[in-house]
Image (cartoon, rainbow, N blue to C red; front, side, top):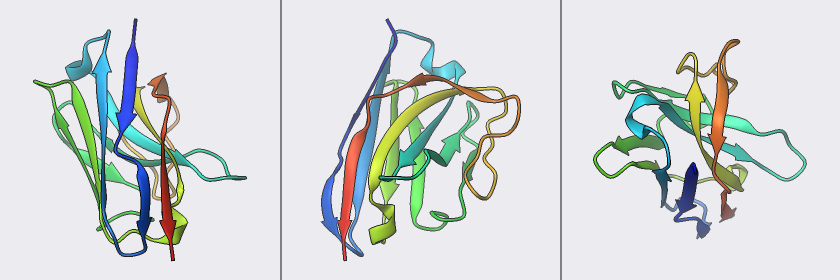
Length: 129
């Protein structure tokens, strides 16, 4: 069955860095747009960044210039390098496989006609100021 397993979350001080990983199995990983979403307490889940099958990337404005997404198709693994972390980055971070357009709006929403096909279970990131 399909599995997306995130790792690498934790607690860090503001200004610090973390690297998240997502190991995928049970489907053709290289054929999917992959991405990271996050959900803070009391807020809706939002898109952070996506990476296409051709390695094209898109970022929400809130993380642009600080976060970098990458993928290793040989290892079926997705990564998120997070630098210059802020307290407002505190959230549960989810790995996802997306169908449709591999794009995010500046606010971090998927375009109409796109949807998440598979979700991971999430990894917590906590940034203290």
